[in-house]
Image (cartoon, rainbow, N blue to C red; front, side, top):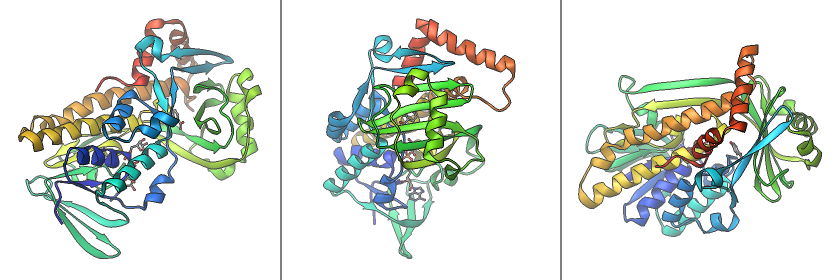
Length: 389
Ligand code: APR
Ligand code: PHB
């Protein structure tokens, strides 16, 4: 088989890139390790920056997002029984949209199937060959049958545990990582959200987040230790702990119910450099990970896709390589700013096992400054809604 771009990974990055390329006549084949249903079974965050929404519009898959997504003009920050609101639209003129990543991925799959573009599911043994040549190819197998795709470029959209990043030689690649000494225990419940905006809470018992998917589907998180398992937590225990970590007036109106999903995610900051090696380009989680506090995971994947899409389009339409040659530097410039915001917001909102009294004073002062300063709230808002591409 031959195609112009082989996309490894059928998650949001791979699907969005594939849809954008298809819309401008560039042929791409998506290789996905799992099934569509498995991919759509993953529960992920749901706060979309305007940049992502614009890309979905460019890809022609934003209709349901606009119908069912909820525009949020701000968020609430709570600490020590008090809370304050940060108004994104007042400070930046830009809101965010709350729409489940799973739904965005579903919309992308539906569009890809309708377009007739090829997606190959349940692939194994994916290997990228000759990425540092002008004739790369990918081998893989389906049901034990070996196959090969020859292509012009390979987009590594296969997430943190994929093969693409590992294809870049160790003496070429440099990795940066920070592991956080806690995780997030999250539940999904078919209950009305506790508020019409997200509530991020720093309590002496640890971090909590009140989020949502729609008017009858809520998403809640509490910080937990990495030694815990979801099975350690009954629904009742979760709800009681959540109530202890959010402002009393919020806890009083919280509507609880059975969890339909319960999981623990560790927190990590990670970046690999460069994000390009020859004709291989890394996108999204294959190249970087952020702690979920700033809801930047999907949104940083989106800006990678934006840069790579325009670079590949320029190449095929004009033969120019300025876009693809500048991809890694341009993508990383925005990625590192998202990494900083996600790390800073996580540092301000969580209780760390080794925090000293001084550290706690610094955290409290950070929160007081954010509460009292319009300049700091503007800085928070412009990072949260998304820095320019
Ligand atoms: N071959 C083919 N597919 C693979 C391979 C492989 N060797 N390894 C992983 N995959 C697939 C995974 O099954 C997954 O569907 O690649 C896809 C990667 O998707 P994500 O992990 O969702 O990464 P990405 O598309 O970059 O999306 C980033 O999704 O995971 C969240 O928090 C993340 O919000 C961020 C966004
Ligand atoms: C979520 O709704 O899952 C969510 C929202 C905001 C975050 C993280 C997760 O910062």
